Image (cartoon, rainbow, N blue to C red):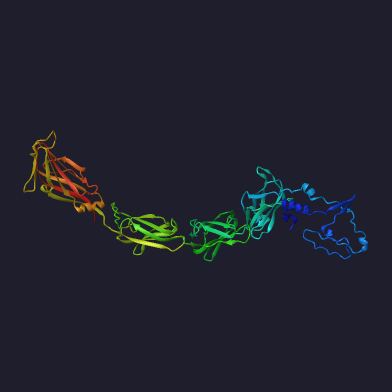
Length: 581
């Protein structure tokens, strides 16, 4: 490891000052002056030695922690010619008071460094793929200094140089700082603390710096989602493709730039399509047209910026046939009467089919009309949508009665042929117009009356001959009628049921045996449809009236003028309608 990477710590200034005080506490030897020559003053141990000392060696005192070992006198007489102390040639040590008075040099305090993040703290490898390659941090110091940047593995404490060029911090609002980009290439995948440290004395390093996470760029988890899982692979451009959404993340949970492929398998057939490269979610359109019908799977094989490809979980898929599942045929009537009389001269044939998938499919099909297995007429089908045909009921342009079979057959692009059939009768009958008439006594029809004269003397009487005699008096308040008589008759069911063949008509005749004065009468239905005319002696009618709406009864009424008399013996009710014969 280079000397740049060694962390150096200066001793606190307080420790240096304490050391100086300890050194000053060690007292130098005292000097005694005799005359003009200084002499060593005897120590306490020397004062305790008798003046008539012998040449026997004096025991050497044991050094203590506060004393330096002393040197004993030599026994060589030549070295001890004189016991008198000689002046010292060494400089006289300064007194502790002198040492204390000199200024003590205290080193400058170490800078206080801090690191904060500016942008993302998550990087991914490889470095040169242009995706999350740098993390920007801000360095702040309380004094001007230059720094380099290390990153320290939060697990192993191994340090990696991140920025080796000295970064001179410049003055900012709150100190001295700078922003610096830390490249992902400075370290392997992992989690790191960013540390800034000075490059000159006094040494300092930041603590509790931010952490940055470096992902490997290897796809660890892959997400794959198809827009649909049910397909109809027949090549008609319908329901035969899907959009696959794919994304991948590394171990940090960061979405990666990805490439790779989508795979579809049906039976033993596999199809692979390169997916669109993207950062985040890739969306790729995949066509399964032409794959065999059956069950299969879909999945994605994804590769991140680094490492091997990762395969997603597979999704089950179905590949169904584009086919007709059922057909139906309907007829407008059960019996055709081809006599061209306007009633059911032809039959309308309607076909439709259910398809899978839903919608209109191209089909190969026919509609046939047969009699005893022989085809009378037919039509082609090309679409599965509802189709209508009309048959005139003729067999080779002839009216041949019988029960005919109508059969429809359809086959889609795939799958089996589906059929359906129905029958229709052909009849030689035709519509003819018939007329019926019935005489009804007047007494059975005219059942009520109302006089309009002031005294209400007008009335209708009934004799044994079933006739009705009505007499009117004067009119009231300038009116034109003196009496009004009414009645009704039911329309026969045969007439009403014939309305399916066309509109029936009715005509009523009045048989009048006596008439004095003026009188009028009417017949009609529903109160608003009627014919009106004057009444005369003898048998008279007001013409034919169409029975629109198939009414159930007819209304008949008589109106008498002032002082009129009329005797009605009977009414003739006629109907005209169509029947099949």
